[in-house]
Length: 253
Ligand SMILES: Nc1ncnc2c1ncn2[C@@H]1O[C@H](COP(=O)(O)OP(=O)(O)OP(=O)(O)O)[C@@H](O)[C@H]1O
Ligand SMILES: [Mg+2]
Image (cartoon, protein in one colour):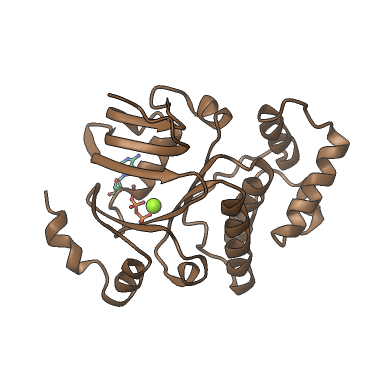
């Protein structure tokens, strides 16, 4: 299959298998650099499974079709290689890694993306700036990764990682969940800034509140592992007012 050289994250007829089940059945989706796309769907429809599969999680295998990043096929690569190529996943439930310092993990991650590695002192300065930008206190620079973080703090920490890493493409799984009003405003500001700087964003969300500010390029609806509709921002409004009932019949396999 010909793979386009355009700056885009492209999924062509992607099927994902989880254990012995087909979790995603033949999905086409394209998120060009600098665009915000939104993925909505009922609980259990496969959104997080798709997010994990994109990042190369071994339990969510792409068994056919292809995923390409700026024309390079990535479906066969491991999570680390995908990250180095510019893909970032913020998981729905960021895992707690006890005993591992947030600063050292992030410094290692950031340095993998840079030709000239940042030393500990200069990185600390960057980290403190990013913490402030997402409304986390400087003491987080000395915390362990997600250990005893509140739900909202985990999401702010993910946002901070997005700011520091500046990936080419970001898959953000419910980064707007559990946040207070100020946190939501911060998410909107950071996502807009990151998108403007050229990052393509696939935002998985259940709520239209961010979208009223951010104006996504496209909204995609997933039902039972398939995309059943794509449209403009109005599609998110109709989901908010009427739910997914109108899409269920089309989504039946
Ligand atoms: N590792 C796993 N083992 C068993 N079942 C799984 C696993 N991962 C996902 N599932 C099941 O696959 C289905 C899709 O899950 P997924 O987390 O992708 O849904 P989702 O669309 O992200 O839902 P939500 O909106 O609730 O986050 C669910 O029924 C879930 O229980
Ligand atoms: Mg999910």
